[in-house]
Each structure stands twice: as C-alpha cells, then as structure tokens.
Image (tube, rainbow, N blue to C red; front, top):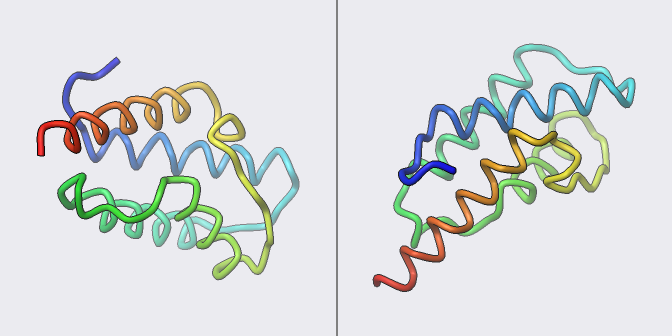
Length: 101
C-alpha cells in the first residue's frame, strides 16, 4: 500500500495490466496504442484528485472501444493483482482527498 500517489507507477501497472489482458484474450494491439493509453491515463490522473472525473477502468474501456474498436468491459480484477492494488490505493487516496476538502 502506497501512502502517496505515484503517477508513473500507477499508469505503468494499468498499462501492463491492459497489455496482459489483451494478449490473454487474443486481441490485436500495438505498442503505439499502449503508449496512447498511458498518455491518456497520465492526463486524467495527473490532475488533482478532486478534478478527476472517471475511474481507471472507465478510461481504459472507453479507450479500447475507441482505439481498438473492442467493446470490452474490463474490471480492475482483469488487470492483475498489481494493477488492482494500484486502483484500490488510488480509490483510498481519492476518498481521503474528498474528506480533507
């Protein structure tokens, strides 16, 4: 459990989780798509918690639909343990930000 938010670690674990999911499900993708996803995640989660409007999986699912034309409904569990733990940590830190507002 991280006490502070590490955007690089967060976006990396999410991107790796997506990559592993796509490989496991024989969904074609390329490195460029993953880099675009990582940029999009960084843009959303690089801002203050209170300004973040979507969850990590919402962003990923929207991206996959737009970029790969795949209508998948990924859950945090689909991304593996490391990404799941990152998402849980993000949720806790986001909740604390709202409580301390």
